[in-house]
Length: 205
Image 1 (tube, rainbow, N blue to C red):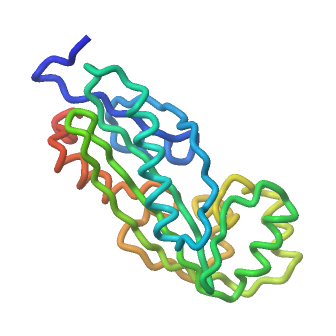
Image 2 (image 1 turned 90 degrees about the vertical axis):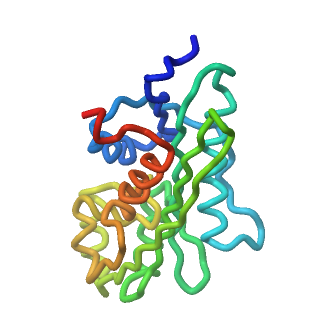
Image 3 (image 1 turned 45 degrees about the vertical axis):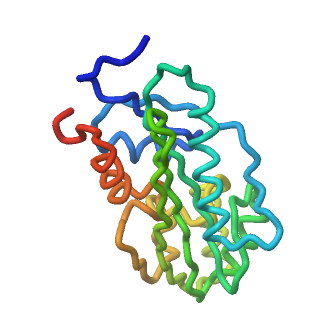
């Protein structure tokens, strides 16, 4: 059924991440969650920024592509890639890989690319941005890293550093224009995009 001209478009989060869902709930607007079915493997020779932006866009477009022709929606896609010394750091998936990531990053500055795409199915257009967060890791011993991993089990988090939890103890400093970017969904950038798309963000409260 087509949306009423006075009704805001449907808002969809193209993600299976509970962290992104919790962040989007802060805006107090109704939204649906649809997990995109895409291959998140980085391409050969791809920079971290390009990987993050490509995957954020692919997630949004994959979900938008499954919508009905009359279903007006704004689809949010986001992806995060961590990097240091030109190396990409993804989700570890296991304890051993998470420990290896944290050992490699201790005492270093790591860049987190939090890419965001807002795809407007009404016009077939997209707004995209890469929000960079610079994170300085503390030089901690293995026993501290092991204690953190046992407490948080952050195996589904890029770089294994769950900053919204105990992972904050791993960090010396965070430098970013958007404090929510490191968690995985840059809300300052997203609200800017929603307003630019004509979504009645504050009026919907």
